[in-house]
Image (tube, rainbow, N blue to C red; front, side, top):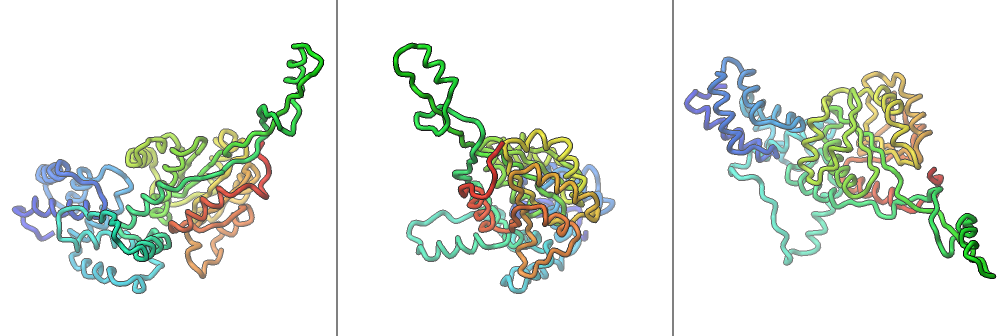
Length: 393
């Protein structure tokens, strides 16, 4: 860092503005705390400055990656801005194999925006050409979550909050009284006969329909970071729209977060989730975490014909050790096991990884989960009338 001590407060304020425009909630109080923390701790090394700013400006774990990149760009490598400006060119110049550039693009937008106010989304205009509206909406639907800017991500999350499962009901073994039901209720018929009379009314029942439990196992490792955080907005909407939604996050361990997602406010919900989960952006131990789920949770949440969504790219740091028996057990206990994999966004995708080849024979559906269109297709599939799936127990 080459700035003199007389300019440190101004630079910290500017750095906080960059974070704010990149989507990190930083207020004036936090900026004052950061300036005071740097003055008290001193700046003997870059590490001292990093942790003084991190402690005062970052309070949720999901913002750590943005902070790390912003700190590197702003304080240590000014020439990075030139490379980031090149990333603002048309999408054809972006290599799809480097996911870390997509998060940096949000920082590029923040650094290139010279205003101190957050990016404002335009108000809807009733006079706008309908063709342009449809075109913009279609582009947003088909754009990869990793390719989205901060403003586009915010718009996509609003769209995810409006997704709902409709007619998602299965036939159960439980029955209810019905005047024209196909089943005869002998118990109710005998009770009615005790009232006397020459004619005994025949009571009938019919089987009930009820939405099945929905169990979600979502990978939060480093390779799944962007998709997992976006998918959590979709899970928050589902959790508050229907009952019996059970959500588990896993990386190197398994964490049950259904209670945290029941908060009505999405920001409060995701903040609670961030505090409950300790293995964000790490490795993935799919076999071990599935074993823990099968042992500790399967009997509690997989009853009554549960549908299971497994959200992972299948890249297992344990080399698929112990994975095959656990995924097979999960498949047997589920009415319907759907694997959502963001790697399917690539046309040339092939199941070369050992974990992917191990899991593929044990899933009912294999779907992409990389943009709004893929999630809309998932909702349509879950909401479709039941055809080939067996009746719930």
